[in-house]
Image (cartoon, rainbow, N blue to C red; front, side):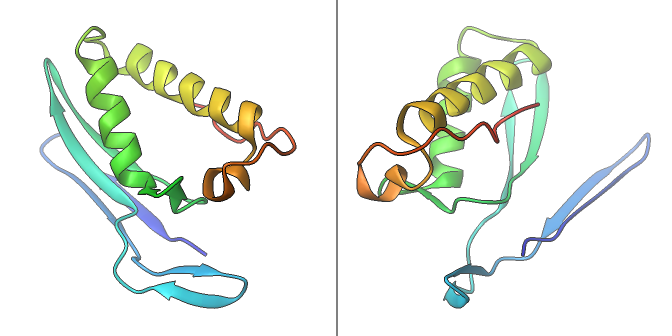
Length: 115
């Protein structure tokens, strides 16, 4: 289970999450980043995620940061940027299924990526 707490007012925004990951009811890692922030042209983005900890051999947070930076080079508004990243992830899920991120094999469709 992942816990992500967010609080903000007109001066600050704070986001915290637990760092433990597990698989098949066993602890996999105690120090895993489930949230991060990026400074992009025109805005700052705080992101937290739950679910799959790795996409292929890469940690999900690395994959997300890379994808956000790639898309952020041409998309400078927050919601269109997030929608394009969600669309990209949904495509990966529907093409390969979540089990395939680790194995590289095709599996059932999964539509869990949304904004």
